[in-house]
Amino acid sequence: MPTRAVLTYSDYAALPDDGRRYELHWGELSEIPTPGTRHQGTLVALGSRLYDHVRARGLGTIFLAPTDCILSNVTVVQPDVLYIATDRLAIISERGIEGPPTLVVKVLSPSTAHLDRDRKMKLYAEHGVPYYWIADPESRSVEAYTLTGAAYAPAGRVTGEPAALPPVSDLTLDPASISSQRPRSDHMTPLRLSSKKHVAHARTSAIALCAPSNPTPNSFRCSWSRVGHL
View (cartoon, rainbow, N blue to C red):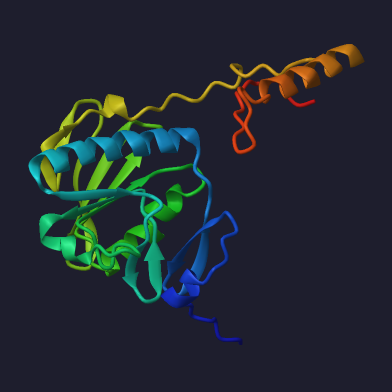
């Protein structure tokens, strides 16, 4: 049976820039799926709330994905939100967070929820991350876990009513800010062109929209407008 190759941070850093995101889990390369809009909306809501609170009180700093969190030479992850308290600021370097942050926040997506509740929890516990949050945009809830020994134990849950969670017990989180609203699919109406004349007019309009204003040899200004696919 062939032996599985164990990749290291050097292999990870040498990956080509192919437009995809990857993580390294115990030496195994994993591709990260592109998140949806609900996921990103929750990430921004939680991240900005934590950032404002932590910065105003001088409690440390906050980073958002994609930020490399180098937990070991064979484990590199990109959590949705990372909180590094003042006593751990030394782990911040130019290439990423080099060691366990104080708190990791994962926002659930349908395609990765099982990983965040199983594989990722074990990974962060093994590498000594003290606190782990799981934010669920669907149920508008945030679950908190505290590292107890070698595994995480439930430490609180925000759902229904505003509440605080460790390690930021003086920050009240409002579940209403965790949106479960599904994006509408009917607000973008494609441009319908019923004749060659309309097609020609649309093409002319598109070209006109990108015509330079007071053109110079080194400048070209283009205005955006949705004209559909021609």
